[in-house]
Image 1 (cartoon, protein in one colour):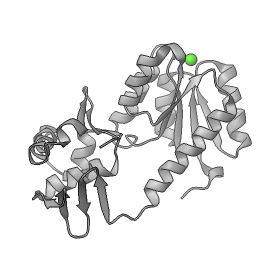
Image 2 (image 1 turned 60 degrees about the vertical axis):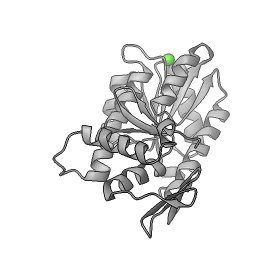
Image 3 (image 1 turned 45 degrees about the vertical axis):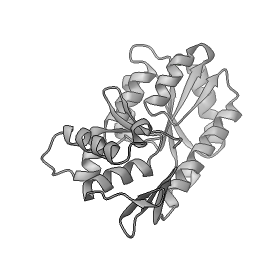
Length: 233
Ligand code: CA
């Protein structure tokens, strides 16, 4: 696990004063921040610098924050990159779209830099907890997945799943609340050398829902991207 001092944070903000202020506070806390002033610049820097977290302003010229967020989530190599969105109070509907697209948290402008830094730290802590857990089982409401015995039960009753259905469900349970693209799921469950199409994912998601009808509302499709398992069972 990288220590705080080695963590790179990309600030995507077109207003130079805000970007500098945020950068200053993050540096004071030992992070390694850099700045991108446009969405296009941000995507370039993400590809070349591999930041550990992105602070993404919603209001950017040309390519806005939502498009940047969507583009980050669509690429398998950055699909799980933590994103903290900066939004204004009157952008509430955009904030909701942003969270649907997979932003991990958001801070409303105007904000105090201290609050922002605290949220950044909290987000890192949350992610580290998930990464460190050596899980042998996963639960989601009344669903229980035993990763050692390869068994899924709902209300204590076993639900027989194929290996791929099991793998797909496991991937959802490990990333609740995150948008998982069809490509990501295909790569994670079927492997990069798999010769099928992303439709395979749709078919298997449907099968999971048939076998466990309560998942019908929990696994939602995210327009043109993929699927998301709701945070709340
Ligand atoms: Ca802005």
